[in-house]
Length: 207
Image 1 (cartoon, rainbow, N blue to C red):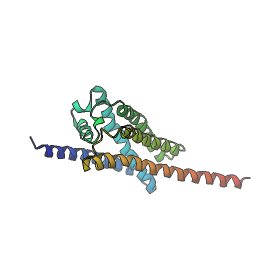
Image 2: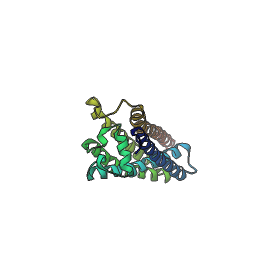
Image 3: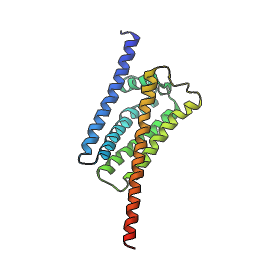
Image 4: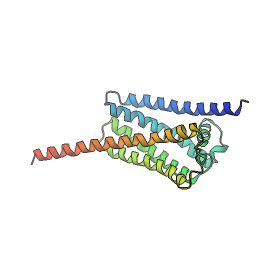
């Protein structure tokens, strides 16, 4: 058996490699679906495909394993990833009602909305920005409710002593789900504003 440091490094490397693989697959699929479209839509589709993969391939199994027992006592590739993340946030190792409740909502609602939004962008549906705003608000709400309860208690479950667990696992990975939904909300604001002004201009022409 390897030394504890070697085992920990291998686990961290495996978790990061799996996340990178999902990112690569999501980007490839999204860029393929967005072929011929503008840069903003291609970027949105790449993110949404990755987002859906994370919800269904990582968070879905987390919910299943949580009801089956808990992550700490589970085996397998997905369990090992969540065990690694659990070194940064201990609530993911055992059945935490708040975390599991949020993950159920994330998998079922956010995952479904991501698929609907992918379809709406590709097919240029009229409801695209309604779904986009709804999904982004759900993602931001999920992020807030994941960390706010622990912050209010003084962050007893968060590991802030390790740069890897704090800056990479907690700050970087979670801030991505704040930054990109925030950018998509801004995009929807701009596009809806354009539609409003275009509608007003057309209305005035026929008055």
